[in-house]
Amino acid sequence: MKTEGYSAGEHFDEMFMPDGTVRPHYEGFYNFLNKASSKKMNHLQYSANKTQLAMGMTFNVYHDNQGMEKILHLDIIPRIISNPEWKKLEAGLKQRIYALNLFLQDIYNDQKILKDGIVPAELILNSKDFLKPCLGLTPPKGIWCHITGTDLVRDKDGEFYILEDNLRCPSGVSYMLESREIIKRVYPELFNQKGVMPVSDYPMKLLKMLQNLSGKAKPVVGVLTPGIYNSAYFEHSYLALQMGVELVNGVDLIVENKKVYMQTTKGLQQIDVIYRRIDDSFLDPLTFNPKSMLGIPGIFDAYKAGNIGLANAPGTGVADDKAVYAYVPKIIKYYLDEDPILHNVPTYLCREEQDRKYVLENIHNLVVKETNAAGGYGMLIGPKATKEEHENFKNLIKSNPSNYIAQPTLSLSTVPTLTDEGIMGRHVDLRPYILYGKEIEVIPGALTRVALKKGSLVVNSSQGGGSKDTWVLYN
Image (cartoon, rainbow, N blue to C red):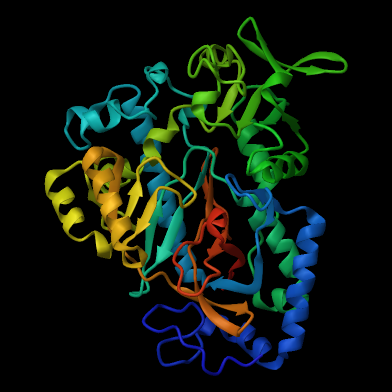
């Protein structure tokens, strides 16, 4: 399928250099692409779509009147990352997760970073995600953020920038795993020739990390889901199946004598570790939100008593607040005495008077985000928005400045994507997954999310985005 006429414009393109030559790590795939007919590529895409349906790779979109279940469209042209580039990403992510874990341990205990004025105390102590019941707590093995999905983007300068830290219940890893299985079937020979690093051992690595949270030789592990109506239920059931552990709802669990038990057909069975996929506030109605119907009364006391391991630890959400994000470079410097390997996107905090003034005057050029929103909601992309939307967000910022940050509009790199008009460049981000067990491990692959609409910078599945398989090369 020919790529003549393909243009990335001013954006960094993952496959092509500015002069149109192919980047070395893409050459093998480019040669395949040029030999394949449009008919063959469309047939391969059709087969991939059918396989996704057969696998049940769906997600639920809240507030969608067209029906709840949707397929996360998988584009069959992969995103390929060279080994040297990946090594830098890996080192930067390990550094960041290590520092954020130290930050969480500190703010729930000695609070040295707050006393030293590196991070404003009121920013943390007044955050709805700072959980006072966690004060004085040290989780098992001293690890707070066991599973992280960090969002990165590549700007037109070719550098990767951290866009967001997801330390609560990061989703999407099942799509990374299933997409890999589909794409391996699409290009079986090419996949082996290219020397692509595997991701299929993620469920076993996840299980090993979870088991590490218990002192028992053979701990019982479960995945706690809010239920079938949750947007990521496919992932919850998929991971439980792949790990060979129980998938449980809150009603399946009870606490007795500060120990957690599953209700089974053979009676009560103690459970030792829970990979929770529900938010902190719903975890325990006795400690957090008393109206929660999803959690387990008394589980937090069992956790404090050391009788249950929870991943991620309650209280991690305060560290991925978008306002706290702006301080992560200082957090890394404070705890590690190192400069960040991977840089943040420049961020304006609307809670700061000078920053707020700049944002209000330049809102048409900026991306404005709610500090606690996710999934592409609560966001304004200034250059794409109307004057009416600009004014609306200005009023929102003025009424609650602490709830908003703003960032320059990055160009976001493009990857050739199969569209109805042929192969076109579409904007992408990158979400690698990091496990923190006995050591920190970055899985050598990622969920690449792609904005399927021409010119769109919003890659979220809930906003019409799709995905690509991400190939990290051995060499």
